Length: 257
Length: 150
Image 1 (cartoon, rainbow over the protein chains, first blue to last red):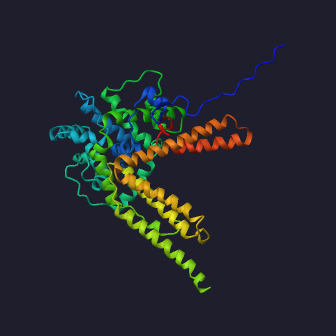
Image 2 (cartoon, each protein chain N blue to C red):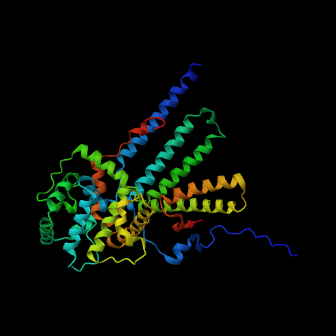
Image 3 (tube, rainbow over the protein chains, first blue to last red):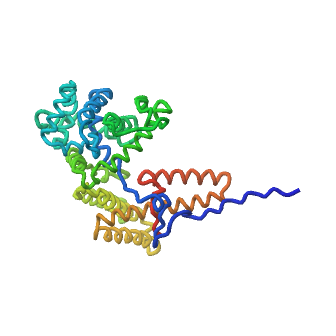
């Protein structure tokens, strides 16, 4: 009777599959599929989508979806594949006439007044924000300290892109893509069950939908947004945030701080 | 005896001075949001230098020709690295981070290799270590996208 041959231990080499280029070992995902471009959620995509969280926080998720739907409906007849109007920077390219046209549409849809009311505290923190033109008067820039504390708390939650708040703001551009008729999803894919995101993260299906949304938005940010260092709104957002709340290094003077 | 009793006071004063100097530098250094990694890297290196100085100052038993040079060598490394980065901060701060991530991925690869020979308790410990290190790298950049420069 033949002895059964014992399975040999896998003799995997360190950095197996990496390609050596000079003194650098390049991973397979990069040398076979790449090069890849880097987009940061917390540094760039999050501040671009933050106004949706302001609307969800101040009014409701349903209201934010209604605003998204009406904006997308307004822009649907226009041929513009580069922008879905979900990112704040999208509004920096909008001329005065186009902005007035959008505001008229939102007034007819009876959402403009509530939209402006919900955004006003946020826009007072960031008066040069491109969406400040939704207001009839330029923001005063008067900072409400209570709101600033509250807003910073919201940002902390949003920094986790897979938190409920993080996924719900990322659902907005996807919804706008559907309404604009620019996003089509094959039957059977998780994203085809998009409305399930409302239940995120309580059901398994909502988690799959949420994961698809995060992946899709990462791709949108990479193709639709300017590079981080050229993104004027994001640069302004972080600089202004630092002015509003300067870094505190007091802990450095305390032992074990 | 009187001299010795003053030692804790001296050590405390040195630590306070170092902390005060570090805080002053961090406050004066304004971040450039076009390249935030420069601020992160430079202040982190300053903090490391301050930590090394405080640790050495706090341990009089190390104030001798055998032990103190170990600290001085590490502090010299920090100085050289910082000087090198400041000659071209935007490029080199990024390179410094990428190199560090690459070294972490290389260490991970060695641990994975070690796993092939490990068994029982040591295998479990290694798995935990690998998982923690992977999570640390992934929080900055997916480990399977990191170049390793040796």
